Image 1 (cartoon, rainbow, N blue to C red):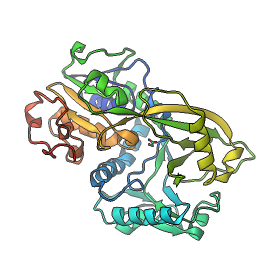
Image 2: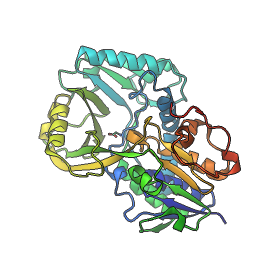
Image 3: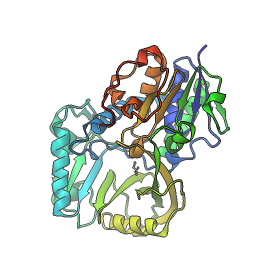
Image 4: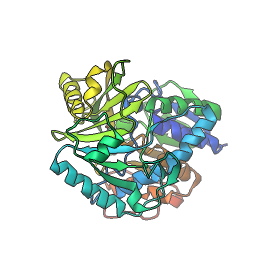
Length: 395
Ligand code: GLY
């Protein structure tokens, strides 16, 4: 019997534990408070295409590889737990001025020219709600003019002059996801230990997955992973307030990116981004900026009830790609997902399982931790000592 310790009970650790237990590993997951960290704070946007930008090809491809896995991943979770995690089918990135509109064209040209996996898309034509596969590149990202925006999302503000519709970028309820993954782990036989691991060498298991997000360097100091704080709000719709948008809405207001992710009872509004170490205080400035910026996109927001403000830590890496790979003969790191931890969950779980089974996942090669010469990798199992993808180091 093969034993596996998973250190960290966010969505990355939980999904790795679930998949490994399903493959026959005896899995113990260590976390003093499972699912209470950034996975709980997050918004649940799955938007690798809308966040694409020329030159960031590896990030686009890694994110798209995970997005393509989401329908099956969610279906497996639903089958195991009965929990549905999707809350929106599409993403709309809106432009408030000419510069924003030009950026949207740049993103559309870059992404639509890229060869990417087929993505399940809803209602490409805008005239029905049948599921289709967006195999035509032009279907992935579509530019909408002012009238198109109003037809798609009538509750958006009149200052919105154009938008980019991503027909195959859904969103999930991150808290439902945590709950479902936890239940799936229990059903698969994962043992939970509410303990803080102080040193990986204390663990006797055959293999260890290090999935402690922004705190990963505390257990493996050479990892170039740092906390990037984000504040995020939850607003509940009151009966008199306008309905939330049906899609994820993304925008840049006064240079600050925001997103509105619909929920059954309201919206999630995120997120600030700055680096101040492990500080979980929600600042007055952060809340003010989020509300003011979002109101210029979705004016009905002011009628919502302010339900919650939280802060979490994105696990930042130097090149905005995660680190998934062996660090020595026992330890696999799965951390550094930055803004994309929820999006990257399915491909990371598959990549970890592939490493455990001895055959690295091709789609996850860009996440090889050996691209950073400063990461101390030693004695990885035989099949993982091939040259890293980027021998020159950070790309
Ligand atoms: N996933 C969006 C964010 O990090 O704010």
